[in-house]
Image (tube, rainbow, N blue to C red; front, side, top):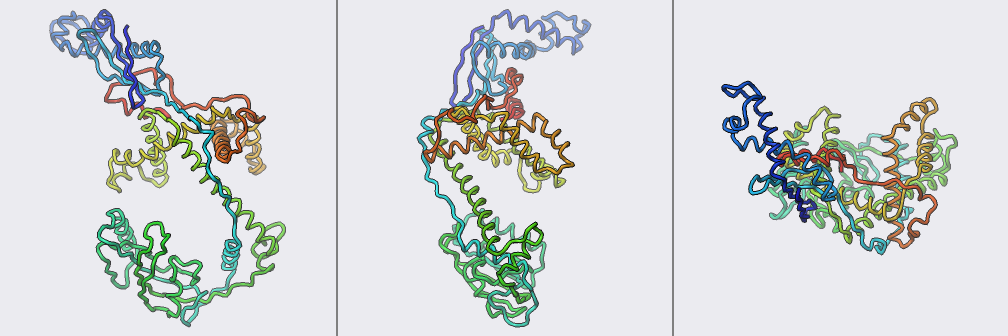
Amino acid sequence: MNIQTEHRDDHTARMVVELETQTLEQAKQTAAKRISKKINIPGFRRGKAPYRVIAKYVGEEAIVEDAVEIISNDVYREALDESKLEPYGPGALEEYHVEPTPTLTFTVPLQPTVALNNYRDVRVEYTAPEVTDEQIDQVMKHLQMEKAVVEDSSRPAALGDRVTLDVHSVIELEDEASDADENEADDSGDEDADEHEHEHEHTHGENDVTFMHAHGEWFMLDPADDPIPGFSEALVGANADETRNFELTLPDDHEEYPGKTVKFDVTVKKVENVTLPPLNDDLAARVTAEEEQPLTLLELRVRTRENMQRELDKEALDKYTNSVLDAIMEQAEIKYPDAMVMDQVQQLLQRLDENLRQNRLTLNDYMQIYRQSINDLVAQYRPSAEQIVRRSLTLREIGIAEQLDVTDAALEARLDEMMGMVNEEERVQARALFDNDRLRDSIRESMMRDLILERIAAIARGEAPEIGSEAEISASAEVETETASTDAEAPTEVSDAESQSSEQEA
């Protein structure tokens, strides 16, 4: 057996295997006998016709095709062993030739590789978030609203009132407005039109985009809560059943339409007077009445600040580690076969299907509703799948390079912590659940990911310890891409390669 391998740019290998003529001839004899057992050849019992008769009856090409199918698996496995290639998933038989020498050509998707390069030199500035007094004041105001007394009012609307509104508003765009924006506006308008009957017509220009569309919703006339600056002021003095038309301008920092004009058509359905309770210890005690020890206003503000700070810190750290990971990936060399991306696409589609089934829908229903084909969905999910693959490979390689691991002791400590959150009577069942190997592996992987993210954040701040220096990083457990070795050893027909590869897990 003569083997030649060629590494391709798409991280696959082309493996050309030349066979001994005798190997193919023996396979042809086996194939002919197998064929003769399936068909009726005049003058012969099944399985008893000689080779030349079978070849004349079904054609030499059919026998060769069957012979290649018989030997391809064994040839592929033996060639893989000799070539030292490391397959990611199942290979595919690309083509075969009988003359001048029997030759089988396979395509082999290769295991991904990551070169992190100078990842420890990556630096990203971190700005710690800080909760402001204004944010705390806003929370206190919402708590006041929860305990407020709301009464119908016959007077014109004033700041501080609660009003029930029908709102129709559009942004007038130029002709170059994107089709996507127009379609989004049309979809939104159609959907609302089906649910509500309009009391009057609203004519919009061809390129108008819906900004706000509400029926019977209440709003607080408070400039701090305005959906657009000036909204509350524009409704001051309006009476119930009065309609007001006005224009407001979106701020320059608006994400989609900075500086654009919004035309409003607003009908006031009801005006209500809101009496807020005093912001004092009594209110704090009412808000925390169900706690073991009610809080004072100062204690409530302190706890609110701590909770908000914790949330802000977590959000900021998530954004920071993502930006650090992006910076590391930008200078890294990440190679992987397309089969790995397709596997991830299949996982995303499977997750979509599971979510749909919870709502008594199927993936086919979804495609019919949105007029999409499976190819459309694959194209839609492919960018996300590729990003997931690149990130997971980079994180895995960082974990290996940094010699990070979740020890058994750390895993048990996390499980004990989780057990502490379970009711006493449910702990027996919970312990049995935590003894499940798959669940334990899942928790360990989650902890490993947290370890790696903590480490890259420390690296980017210039605070990372020397590799392998920390006491809690011990005993190794490899973090590898999951591949089924049995599948990796067997080729598939070229036409089935994509569907077979999707059965692997990235």
